[in-house]
Amino acid sequence: MNDEKEIQQEGLMGEAPVSEEQPVEEGVEIPHKTEEEDQPTIEPASEDEVLEKPEFLEDKFWDSKDGVKVEDLNNSYKELQKQFSMGKHKAPKEYDLSVFEGIDVEEDPLAQEFVDWANENKPTQEAFDKLVGKFRELADVQEEESSINVEEETQKLGPNASQIINGIKQWGQGLVSKGVWSENDFEEFKVFAATASGINALNKVRKYYGEQQIPVATVEMDGMPSQDELYEMVADPKYKSDPSFRRQVEQKFAQAFPGSVDTGEI
Image (cartoon, rainbow, N blue to C red; front, side, top):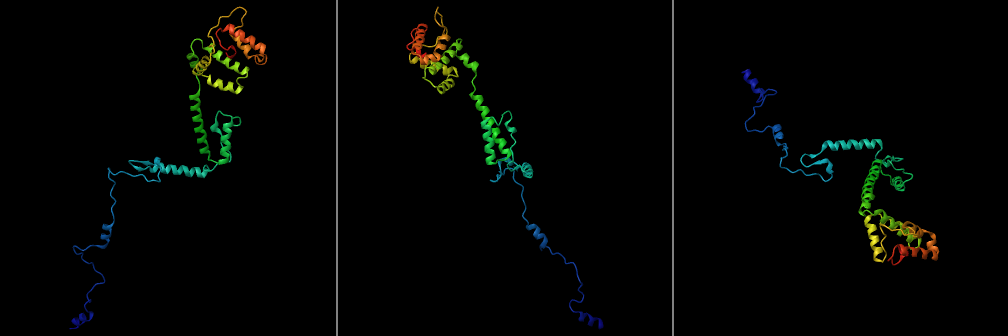
């Protein structure tokens, strides 16, 4: 009786242990497993998927197949850090002028203009070097394109090229000595007559206005000055200032070059 009474006194929880394992019922979800199953999964990109470059990313850091060039981007960042640490992102106190190799900066007006511009606008040394380097490249190309091959141009004038060249030169000098042309006009004339095409064009103009072409070969007569001597007489200052001397020269030209309409314009 006492035992039964003791059991009754302990009540319904009399034999309940402090802890015990609970059997897992089938079909019941386990909380921590449910959370794991709810996590989103990242599916690998399909081979057919087209990658799109971010707008802020430069083309040099992008590959249409692999996407961002992480290594190149990282190296660029490191180089940028290096330049910042060395102060290369700022304008130097004094520019290194080695980019002008072969040019005397103090004597070359254009080079000095570059230096003055840099001192005023404060570009970095790298930007300054790139600017000057690019300009020198363009200048070299332009010089190469505009250069004249004297040998080729002489050949275009034929076997009597030397007489033709000398004739057109003395014709221009004669116009200067008579006051028809100024020295600046003669300089422009030299530019135009620098090629075979230019000389031929000038001779066509002279022919159109009735001038006799400069003979490619002359026959010297006794008592008559040679062609070179005649043009030296035209270049003489007296040809411009002395009317009597000018008439004598023109008469000699008329004898040497019969048929010339205006010997003074040869």
